Every structure is written in C-alpha cells, then in structure tokens.
Length: 197
Picture 1 (tube, rainbow, N blue to C red):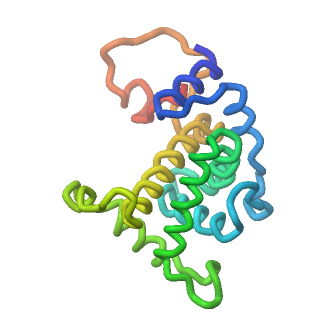
Picture 2 (picture 1 turned 180 degrees about the vertical axis):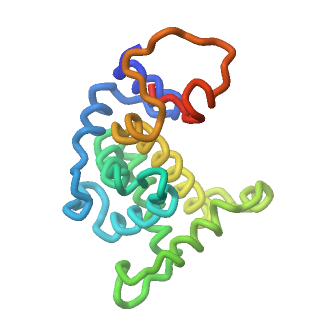
C-alpha cells in the first residue's frame, strides 16, 4: 500500500471524504515557522484560540513533539478552508465563536487568556460523563461547544498522526517493510510504537 492509498483510507475512516492529492498538498503546504502563521479562513482571535486548544490537547513532551511542532493549527485552518462545504465551514466558525464567548475574554483581548482558561474549558466539556453530555440540548451553546471541541480534538489527532515528522520520528516507520512476522508482541516488533504506515 502506498502513502497515497493510506492517506485516502485514513481520511475516509475518520469521516473525511477528500481527494487524496488535496490532502497531500495540505499536509506539505503548512508553513514551517508557526510564528509567521496568519489564518486564511479563521479570524486572528479564532486562530489564537485554536492554537492554544490544540497545544493543550497534544502538548510537547520529552518523548515527542507536540501539535504546534508539526503545525496542526495551520493544517486545520487550511483543511477547513479547502475541504469543508460552506455549511460545514459556517458550523465550524459558529462553534469557535461559541468557544470564544465561553472563554470570557478580558478587556486586553484573546491574547491575555491564560492556559488555565483553556484547560478549564476543555475539562468542562471533554471530561464530562455520558449523562452530562446527554443533558446538552441540541442546538444549545453547550451542545455546540462540546461538538466543536470534540471535532477539534479528533482532527488534531488525525493531522498529528499523519504528519511526516511524527510518522518518521515518533511512530514505527519502515518505508520498505520486510518479512511479515505473525504472533509477536508489539514490544518485540516495534519497541511498543504504533506503525506510521
């Protein structure tokens, strides 16, 4: 299976039906310098909020780079602008606007928000029980925020795992697989790492 077929399969399993060349160009078109990023679809405030949320969802650790190291916010912005329908784009923007409202932005602006503010928001919505989630009425602010955060989390993980840096440096990578060995442990096969291909 080549990389093109793999990305197409990954996209379809996550629920994204996009032409494979488009995904490949998106994966490689994100700028390498995160500080120079200017959102093309999102507003600057929405870009700041997305960046902080993604950084908390997939932070940098001693063992692995974080989402910001592989430009996940830039990818999400580009992916939404190129792949979502107008209706999906409007829904995503509405969700981010609801998130901005829930964050209680200080007078100084979005830049003055602290990690604790974002962390409290993520904990409030993504660490809820099934019963608490069922209490959200469809169309309510809580329902919209929960679904938007859940979507950001799943898209971030997908973008992170399909980035070249993570595929080659963090996950087990073998561009030309050798002999298939059945019935061996993951520790023996890849030292406990998942396969990137």
